[in-house]
Image 1 (cartoon, protein in one colour):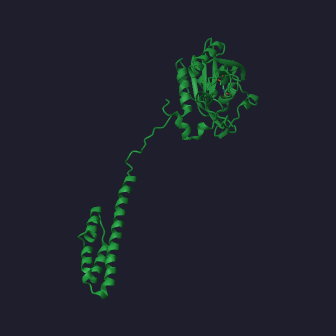
Image 2 (cartoon, rainbow, N blue to C red):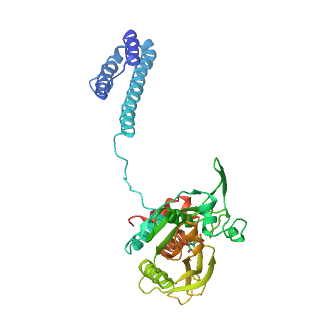
Image 3 (cartoon, helix red, strand yellow):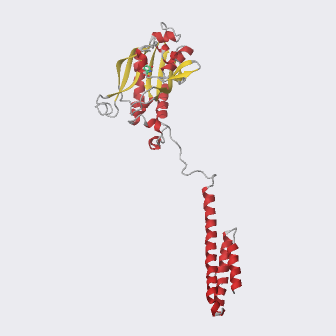
Length: 340
Ligand code: DAH
């Protein structure tokens, strides 16, 4: 009996299985109701009394070892099933979420669409600019204090000192240098200024420049174009207001406000109780600028305007902090899901 039991303990010890079914067969063979252990217990009464203690212990050991072996093998097979499930790299990720357009892109595209309906094309220029295109051609002479209106990032380059463009007005110079009037184009793009980052200022942002050059273009054309834009962008009831201003590249120059859509111009904290919100700068292109770019200022005239995309998006979506645009926080970005 003792030899039988020791052999059985060794058999349990050595048992392995390739499939879960083999574990179950093993269980039935050893522990099942007609299994080996059952017979051993039945034979136990024939064991001489002086051996009963030792044999009893061996029978219990078989039982315990077999159960432990079965539990261990079962666990191996269960984990194997789970692990193949978790590493099935061919399965599609779930939930399968689509991204959303950034509010800056949404507003930029909408502005381009509105102006394209009245014949404006889109043109782009480089973000790293030379002094001529960002300043000098636009009537900012060297050392002129107007250059301080825009804190500039300068960069060293093989062609001498360059700058990150401070405005998209640089693109109008490139267009006028390379095209003949009539010109009617929009230049969207990123611009950079050396400013401390806060809720109201950032070191980079986006502008859209507009330029219209032809014969007999007047200030009335500028006003009508901007009124059309404001109504399309902010609603039919929108009014605009022009305030005289100064830019080196336009004469006369103006800043344009739209009536506050939050309070219907009654006065609220968004418009600081003025009923109006500033959205852009504009003016008639200075004859010096036309001549700098090789366009005959006796024959042609034109207007230009420049607006901040972040600012328009703030008004449209009631966003109160510029930093939200560049932080990549999905809780902010998810709000624009579904917008095209
Ligand atoms: N470039 C100006 C700026 O960044 C915006 C601007 C004002 C553009 C008047 C224009 C304009 O074309 O006519 O502040």
